[in-house]
Amino acid sequence: MPRSNPESSISNRFDFHSEDYLNRPRVIYAPGSVVYFAGLARTPWYTKCRKTVLYGIVVENYTDGIILQMIEPKDTRKIDGVPIKDYPAASEWRKLPKGWSWKTNLVPQWTGSNNIFLDDGIENPKNLSVENPDNILELYKDGYLVNVQDNDHCTLNSEIDNRYGYRIVKQYNEYYQPFVSLPWRDAHDTYAGAKAIVEAEEAELKRQSELTDLEWSVEQIEHDIDRWAFFFGKTEQEKEKLRGWMMALKDLENVETRVANGTFEWKYFKNKRWSAPDII
View (cartoon, rainbow, N blue to C red):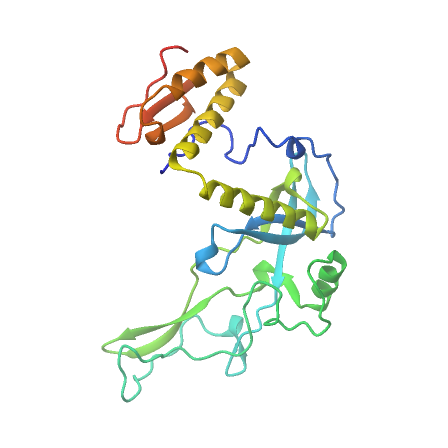
C-alpha cells in the first residue's frame, strides 16, 4: 500500500534503530584524500532510485560534514575526431538525406565512451581499480579520472524543420553536481565500508518486499510511534497505550500515520482528514 511522506522536521534518513550510525566516531579526512559513500546511481535510468558506491576527493572538513570534489572517468567521446565538449551546441542546418523517414537516425555516431563508471568501456591501461583509493588518486593524476565539471554530459539529438532541414543539437537532461556536502557519518575511507551500506539497504528493501500489506502497515505505524515518543519525550507505557489503540483499528493495512502538528496523527488512505487518537 502507498504511504505518504512523513511531515516532520526530521530527515527520512534518521534511523532510531541504527546505533552504529549515530555512534560513529568523527574522522577528519585530509584534503586531497579519497572518500567513499553510498549515493544514488545516475545511470541507467531505471536504477535512479538505486544506490551505488560513489567517491570523491576531499576539499574541506566542516563541523557537520565534508566537501567533496566529485570525479568520474573522462568523457572520451569524439565525433569525426572532434572531442564531444568541442562539438558545437548546434550544427549547421542540412538537407534531409534521400529516403528520409521519421525512423532515420540523423545523429552522428561517436567513438569512445561516456560511461561514468570505471569499467571495460573506459580507457584504463593500468587496469587500476576504484576499490583502492591509491589507484583512484593515480588515475586522477594521469587524467583518466577527472572533475565532474570538466566533462560534457550532453546527449545529441536531431532537430527538424520543414524550411531549414535538420541539425544536430546538444541536450543536457541532468545536472551533474561537481561538489557534494556529505554528512561526516556517511563518509568511508574504504570501498568496502560504503559497499556494506549499499548491500544492507538493498537487503532491507528485499525484506520489506516480502511483507504482507498488514505487516508493512504495522511496521510503519510502530516506526511513527517511535518517532512521536522520541520527539515528545513519551514513556514506554504511553507508547504501548498508543500502540494498543492503533492495533485495535479495523482494516489496519489501509491506515497511514504521521508525526505532525505537534502530535501523532492517523487516517485511512481513502480519507483526506487526519486526526489524533483521543487517548493522547
